[in-house]
Amino acid sequence: MTNRIAEILNIEKPIIQGPMAWITNAEFVAAVSNAGRLGILGPNAGQTDVTRSPEKTAERMKIEIQKANYTTNS
Image (tube, rainbow, N blue to C red; front, side, top):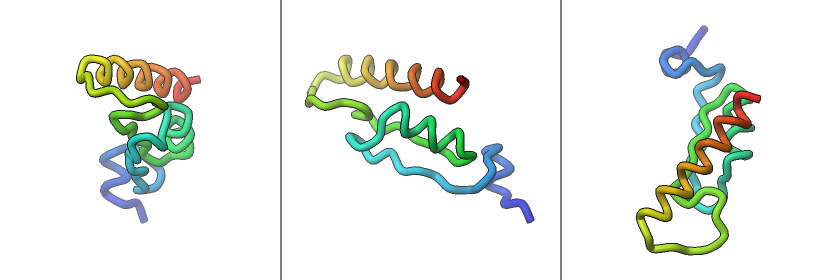
């Protein structure tokens, strides 16, 4: 029996990995997604230093999204 959420999200299992801020990175999220689950990046994913700049946070997030997209589609 297929779960409706899995159908809507087009994933194998309705398992959603939490963003976990500093712990996640593009490679981790891509691995979760490649396993048929839903991987989610947090706003500080893949970072090792703190910034209070919204612009820098957005730029870092954009880079992580691009890396995750590349890793997921490879």
